[in-house]
Image (tube, rainbow, N blue to C red; front, side):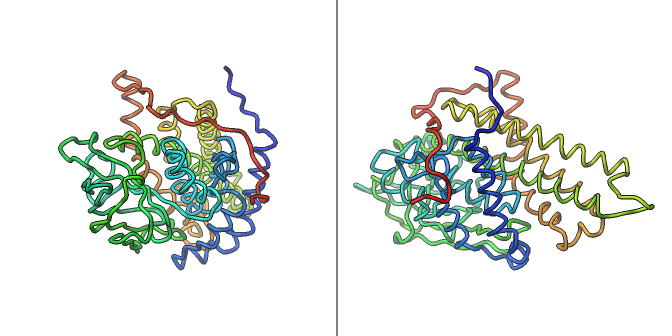
Length: 406
């Protein structure tokens, strides 16, 4: 079946709604928020009120019922304003809510997914640890079965929304000797005895977002909070990361677009040697490369969205989109600063923030180096995708208009 790349009226509505939201709620304040390292959860709440926090979740579970093209556009437009607001879409929606939609029982969906999709509860995802990043099979956090509960001990690091989230989808090992086959997934709720969180200070970028740690000290988690079967956590985590990588890739396209927007404006504004700097050949070269990469990254994301809409496995395609789009966003930010010259090195213009924000995405959700290996392994035939016990959930179609959510 051919891929139709045209945007539907619903896609265009999401795009305009997201742009209007960013113009009203984010762009007037983001320079100050970034400079002061301030997260503003009240803006996240307003994102929930207009339906963003349940964007691709079916209406039956409190969501907006968007298709994945719309979801990608939403992530793109939010990161075009600032990365911190796309991060909320990644961890709350992509990594947590869509994982519950795919792997949770009906009772679990009603208990956690519905309030998350409605924006009543904020959620995050806890896989990374102080000593574990790319090597996700080597978790040190443990879960010991004790009757009808599990007792969790350990910690997670670099967790977005750590100090703000109500629900945590976390991964722990029930059997270290079993490697990735011992990893199990749990929903942990704020307020459980022994659960504490903390904020990380001194980050390079994404300063308008909250990033922190989660600590588990004899945290007792009921068995009904387990997602999937015991030992199935690694598979669940990898399927979640496919969702997260799509949001990161889509957001990176938006960040590169923001770099291009700023560069075009400055190239017309600034004059040297009696003409706009946009007339200089090497400035044109940087701008042309920016534009070409944005188009390529957007097409890769639309391919992923098409597969997701059909409920098809998309690990290879999502990895490629994430690798290409995030690398291009970093290069676009570097070129945008070069075009701005000395002004690009100060926060008088937004491009220095774009560069600081861009760097994280080539690290989280799999480093660029990991994605290089993934793509090579597919090409060499060393890697192939196997069917999941719980296949991806296809898009359900578009629900109630954004801004009219109950």
